[in-house]
Image (tube, rainbow, N blue to C red; front, side, top):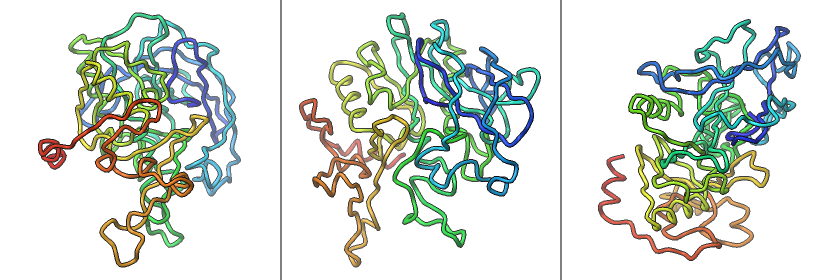
Length: 350
């Protein structure tokens, strides 16, 4: 997808590439729940586009595996953008959606079992449109951090000898990569374990059965102001919401302090600090070098963030949140925050 989240009135655009000569269709579905214990998404067809003309890759490119340049993990695959809609219809309700790319003459109406054929995105509530009182913040930054393309993620990279090393990990993760939120390191989609987005599918399934109305946004929308928390009485996150920006944390703390309810249904919450790039196409996270417990080599815990080198500041990226007890935004007054024994016991249980 050109953007991980859109709102009514925004363009809907995709980046599609294939080595096949077959016709290509793009089917848009809304996620309405999950189908089984492995949390496969249940889909409701919204609209079909096509046939469209995707970017055609040569049959021999990369020995049949490489789909983009060597730095695609950080800079994106750079496939041409294809506009599907100039304006997302106001009738599309806020929620999680899937764009599926296929050659089938009729929509499949089920999730694909091939990596990269499905792309997740979020539709936010439209401006001025009445909506729910509850906002679900989807952990898109965590999808980005764990997603592997060309053998690199924010956790490790693979050496020429086939071994994975933390020293080779990346510090930047692009949204313009196939399979975000759905793929696992072995390249499979929707299996053998639930996808990163699977817990949110299960939450949607429960919402549908209970008839509860909820709007959706990404954590990056909370950070950049595309989601206005003051429009809601409660904010909920689901599952593994590990990577947050400083502005995101400030916005949620401010919402909480103004009387908003915050509901965290999951573990490993707000562990790593990231920042969004200026063009909103990637996140950056400069994790500390070495081992924090390694004093022998003198580099354990050294910040690798270039902004830290320019102006030393522990509140940049990469450190865990327990080292950042205060607000990280310069636009708001800093607020004291104390981690209590209860907080620590809760962290241990997760």
